[in-house]
Each structure stands twice: as C-alpha cells, then as structure tokens.
Amino acid sequence: MTVTTSQDEQLGAAIGAIPSGLFIVTSQQNDKTATMLASWVQQAGFTPPSVTIIVAKGRPIESFLTVGSPVVINIAEKGQGKIIGHFAKGFAPDIDPFDGVETAAAPSGQPYLTDAIAYLDATVTGSLDAGDHTVILATINAGERLREGESAIHTRKNGFKY
Image 1 (tube, rainbow, N blue to C red):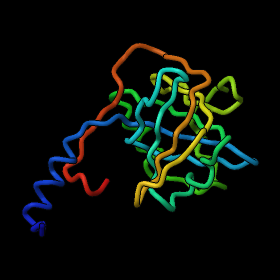
Image 2 (image 1 turned 135 degrees about the horizontal axis):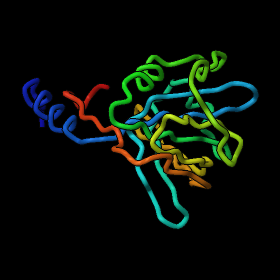
Image 3 (image 1 turned 45 degrees about the horizontal axis):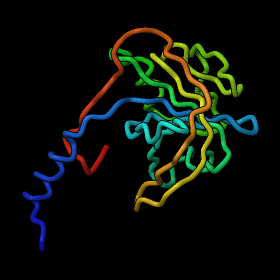
C-alpha cells in the first residue's frame, strides 16, 4: 500500500493527538549530568514498579541510560513553562543544567527538581531498540509527590515530529 502525502498528514495528526506528560529526565554519573525534556514516559509495571522512557537515538542522555544506571524522572506541573523551557533547550553533559534551578537529593543521591509535582528515583533495568528511538525500562526505587496539582500534558500537531 502506498501512503500519500494527504494520508501522511492525516496519520501524523491522528498520532499527534495521543496525549502525553512532560517530564525532565536526569542522570548524574562521573561528575557529569545528562538531562532531557521527555514526553514519552509511561508506567510499565506494578511489581516491581517500573516505567518506560523513550529516548531518540543519538541524544547525549542515551549513553547515560545503560543497565544499572541511576535515572530520575521529574514530573512537570501544569503551568511550569519556565522550568519546561529551561530543560527544553538541552544541555551538553559537561554543562550544569541545574545552575539556577532548585534541587534536593533523592534517596539514591541523584538530584531531583523541587519545583516538580513529583519525582521518581529509578535504576535502568533494560532497553529495547525501537527504530529511531530506544525504549528504556527503569525500576522505581523511591519517589515522592511533592505537592497537589495537575501534571503537565500536551499533544502534538504532527505525530511524526516533536
């Protein structure tokens, strides 16, 4: 079956309608920090509690998310455009993304954002190739709801690009 441009546009619009949250994913290792503004994070299991994190291949954080690595998922709150914008610009691993941002230490010692609505302190336990992305599986070791409020969500106009 050949897909036409019109069909591509329709399919892209349909896929883009899938709602997702907004998350700041971080990992600190060997005095370097990798971060990523993510929208593809999803609970994956109850026992043990786990999540999937989808990472575009080639992003700097990808090399930080190997089996056994620590990872923190900060759940953004609706209306936090400033903090979302800060992390959306991306950072090289040798730049401190937390400069000017308030953090505290999770039980693992990894930093979490105190402005997040909640955070999950996790360990990477597996990965799966998904074409142009990698599916990271992480087991949640700890976490905390920091305050009441609504999690930030968004949809995309086109499901074939961010």
